[in-house]
Amino acid sequence: MPESAAGTPLHIITLVKWVPDAQLERRFTAERRIDRSEGILGELDEYPLEAALQIKEAASRDVRVSALTIGPAGAATAAKKALQIGADDAFHLSDDALTGADVVATSAALAAAIEHVLADGDAEGEHLVITGMASEDGESGAVPPQLAERLGLNLVTQATAVALEEDRLVVTRASATEQQRLAAALPAVVSVTDQANEPRYPNFKAIMAAKKKPMTSWSLADVGLDASAVASKATVLTAEARPPRTAGEIITDEGDAGVKIVEFLAKERVL
Amino acid sequence: MSVALVFFESLDARLSSAQQELLTLAATLGEVHVVTGTPGDRAVDAVAVEGVQTVYTGDAEILTPDPALVDLLETAVQETAASAILAPDTPDSTDALARLAVRLDTGIITDAVGIDSERRVTKSVLAGSYTTTAEVAEDRALVATVKPNSVEAAVVAGQAPEVVALPVGPSLAEGAAASGGVEVLQRTPLEVSERPALTEARVVVAGGRGVDGNFGPLEELADELGAAIGASRAATDAGWIDHAAQVGQTGVTVSPQLYISAGISGAIQQRAGMQTAQTIVAINKDEDAPVFEIADFGVVGDLFEVVPQMVEELRRRKG
Image 1 (cartoon, one colour):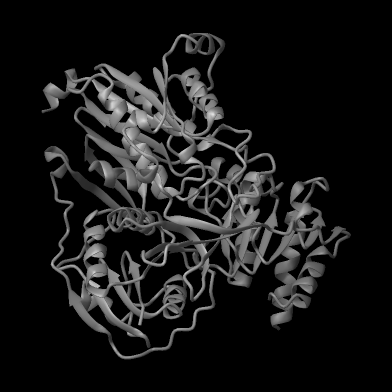
Image 2: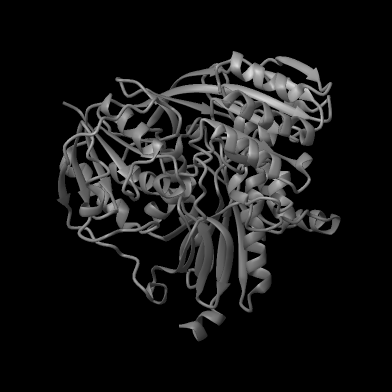
């Protein structure tokens, strides 16, 4: 197997998401959905892209890196950014029926889209799906395991290091109690943390080159799904802005601030 | 009566505080059963707790990240007809429950901070800036992970529950990667600290760029307060402390009773991980540090003078 794998093309699909900028104020709409009128490529999605590009650059075989995103029209921006960073091509699934999709609906749509990306070309090659540790807005981390479950692929989550060694992936990750080194055969779904690498920035040449890279837009029907296949199972009943924390007492140390903090803690009964 | 099934990846001789909290929460939802990868003879003493009826295990030990844990969960759900399946909010439990939700064709809600008797789930979202409630349809099971420090633990020692070994065994075999699967090459236990776990601690003392490589004074303060040590990304990236200590958007999220922030500017990345703390105390040299906008008590000053004085004062008060 190792010898034959060296010549087998590898197709890596990285999932990217267009999310509201966490540096700015994020809010819910009156429909109890996250306001997606503006966004950026999620920072946590730069790590899977970088992991894919490093695998491609280190490999002695043909590696194609595709970026896949789901989201409203604006999400194409995230896909374009992925092309600038170095993905070879991009796919954008957009459909009104996906508005407010929960984890289960998102993974159902992504699973179908991944199958269509894979059908687009090298059916004979090997496949790898790389995602971030979580989306920056949903923060659940539950989509990668659901993709592995739906697609019947091996799963390795929360990777802090990923390398392709001939025909298998070698991954380092942390569980709640231990550090684990794992080997996984392809095809697989791997989620990577922000410890996995140092993402690159696109340079001018890459930005210009990205304009010529293909981007495919799909609706749900294009990937063989109807709206009922992506119905959310969890319903958001209420979404309340947390009352903003207000600044309390701020003092400048005049040699007794340590004592004053302890007095404050005693008064607040948190000692 | 409805059934709440609680999943623990593994059980030690004693329940952690997060595990106790989860059993307490589960008891408000129905009859409690536990399912775990740890063999029954080792699991049973830990869950000899009033209200826990049964502990379901595999026919041998199943360790993370073995997907056999999902088979075990699925079988236990069939056995118990559970209407709520809960687990602590850890990466491997999230993976297992997420896969289970696909098999049960139901929703998953992660990072819950509360679940009421109608199975409505409360969680904190968008880095603590919103609180949402959500539910799954009445005829579907609720699958949820729960954050530590969400409920007050109230478990009472009780009779040993019945142990039921289900016909599910481990699937991660040596050499599996060569035949299409996943295998574990090496397991290294994470360093166990004498201090409480960061996500579970009632008090967190956290340091950032301002500690300049020296966490010594903060550790002394943490010792006095029985606190866990946290850090900003600047401090973990600098290598001054292990990455596991990172509090923030890409690290852990904490909701302690008291969060003491020393030498951390409090950029949004950091705030995302700690702004649901009950009380925040901040010490920073820079009076314009954003952390002062959210601190209940702030000191503009040198942490290397303020923190040792706190330690001294705490010791004096203890007499």
